[in-house]
Length: 196
Image (cartoon, rainbow, N blue to C red; front, side):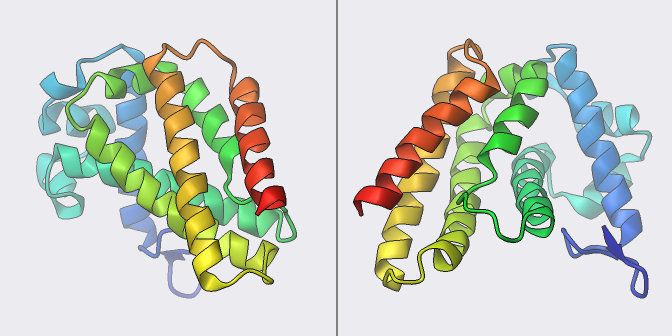
């Protein structure tokens, strides 16, 4: 979604051309990951070539391949949350977990390749920080009766629980369906929101 007056993508805050380039790079990673690529062996030139952009264009957006892998994952989480918030303004969930599990399940090849990469731990830490931010904002809407400290504590727990389930699923070879992962997450979050 973009602002027609400014040409800015409302989910990412960047102009349409930059958003298009980043989308092409993300799609290139999907394609390379589907081939069960060794993420650590990939070069920026491999990703840029697959995306149909130059290396210099890549470096206009990202400092390195690792920066791209981390920021792209975090941006995907942020875009998913923004789309959910727009489509379901009165929703009761705290994270867009269903869409995230589905997305990652649909990209099992890339997910498995990322799990084996050296950037995986950094990617998960960055994702957890973004998820905390999202959870805290949604808890403010859902649980206005809680103090800011209670919301922050719950957000840390919920984001950490999501990341732990996601890592367990990915590192275990995606043996469960995205729906089963969502059910497990909902049970955990439900306990936090009811028992707190």
